[in-house]
Length: 433
Image (cartoon, rainbow, N blue to C red; front, side, top):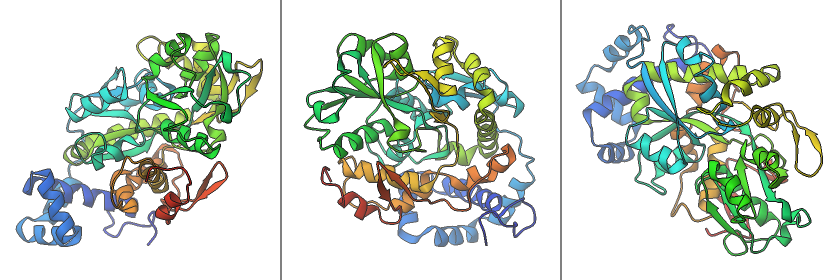
């Protein structure tokens, strides 16, 4: 049966919605039966999910629990929420949903909290100071796998934006645009576990540079990048916007290449929440995701971009001149090289969390030594990137969900087959794996 076929029980609009509800109830019951997360994961690994839930059903009336869940009416368990964000245009749907009323429309009182950097975002969500957060799309994978922090099951129900990054160089390097001339350059990326890091590494490696030996890459919070470029602490960065455009606006940098020219349609940032939040507050989670997907659908339309720029530019959100934000969102922008470019999809908003995106990210984590040992790429992708949840609600928001969770694509002309991740990692001459 198709993922978007009719529901077998007749109570839901689709098979996806039926399966999502069943999964939420089963996981909540299992969590209550085995509170220890590590023990629960070992149990599932040992016997398999099907056997585990079959055994659980002999001790607990899962059918009754699912029926009670269905009759609950969908009222949010919690309405006052805190959602952390970094002040960049990648967070547009999460930010704009506050001043433009999308959260309130779904019965939520959400405080969007401007946060200094990604490590702070991670720590505050893990410590439950934030209910959910704007994260870099690799972060929920890294958190789930315990890369860079203790392992905690995390989820990514929606991509916040696609494209929306660029390589920006200091103005003094206008005559050194060939990557072969970048040996010794100091670059910044927002975080070790970021698309920015992986795309910069990919880009320079395809041009013959070893990113760990021929250049320096350091993590710098996006709000500090332009100041570091101005102070000559950096030669360039692969950054989210509006950082790149602000460097041009301030006359300290120029846009060397947009990230869409490295991989058109790549994921950037994401809406993320712990597995615990998703399973213990399912109605709140659904309302929050629905509000963000509605905002995403609104942001996709080009004629809304100037209105959105005005809404998110103020100090409590991006703290940027409206002109800078407009140039990013509309795709009509000065590049710092004397040109005005028109690239309507410089940044775009497509929320579907493709499992193939997750697999590609995991291959780069493996390639650069962030993951050790064997990786079950497809299993981790399914666990973290909640494609079923996104598909279920996208149609309600006026967005068309795809019929599959996998697709092939190319990065700098090199084809990626998500069914052959090991071969992909091994195909690179420059790697740490």
